[in-house]
Image: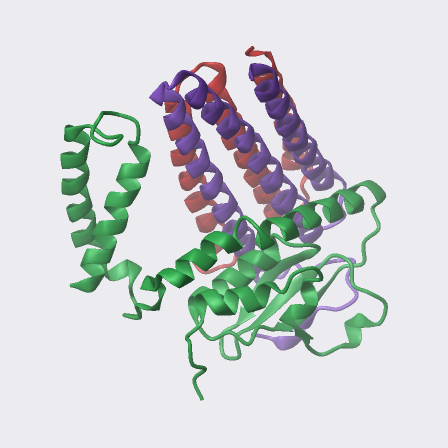
Length: 120
Length: 85
Length: 181
């Protein structure tokens, strides 16, 4: 049983770190603000969800094994942090994209820009 | 037993340093703000993992509060950039 | 009175979730239960006007909550996984063709538009940039437009998701039962 638990947490942590790394590489590599935002919002949210899932699996596994309520608390709080992360990241990305477009920074390699044409 | 968690935290710390490269290079203000946002997200993920490394639930609670505060800060910076403040 | 009761109940539920595992009445200790009740009443009294501002209680229907609980882990998570594989491909190859397009949402309520915007941001190749307050159209930054797609005036919101029809799910969760004429 502990072997399987370790294996699952290894896999989840690996996926999480991989997607976080892809998000940061995209942040360094993409040409303008909006494409960078694609990389950071999606990939770091997904990676952080997976690292939190590793903590949740670890906590639940030890809670079922030892019946120690400290690990249940760890799992529940990690779940709340994960939900908060997924929710707030998307909203702050909207706010930043809208503000940047309002301040006059348009996507530089772009084939069309309907928001600038709409003139809201 | 603790190894994999500590290694993961170190990887996240290295990624934070990489994100700070964009923070220094970033040609405009919003670029720097999204770099800070990415660093904040990674900090929350690292804090959740540190809760396992040190066997303390309080790290995860601090991560929740840190995340909500950084969310509010990002919203205010966005309002400032958009000229609504 | 109803907003106060809803806010108090939700605050108490949040306190119970945060303090689970502290004692032996169920999972909670007596002091935590009393303290949670007092704090929940104070929170409900202070913030009763923020949560239910529109005085519309359709979200009290448990069927909507159950659909929301199914929506987040299954269809939404599948699209999220696809989105990240897509972003990984773009990061590695650097093959992008970005542009901002206009998408008809056909949703009326604030909650519905909020859920659609969040779902769009976390799904493949798209990021919500702005909203037209009058017509409830969304402006989407698309990282890889197809050839000739930049000439289209409008997109329907179902065209953005290829595997699962997420807008239909959102309409079932958040919209009014009868469409207003």
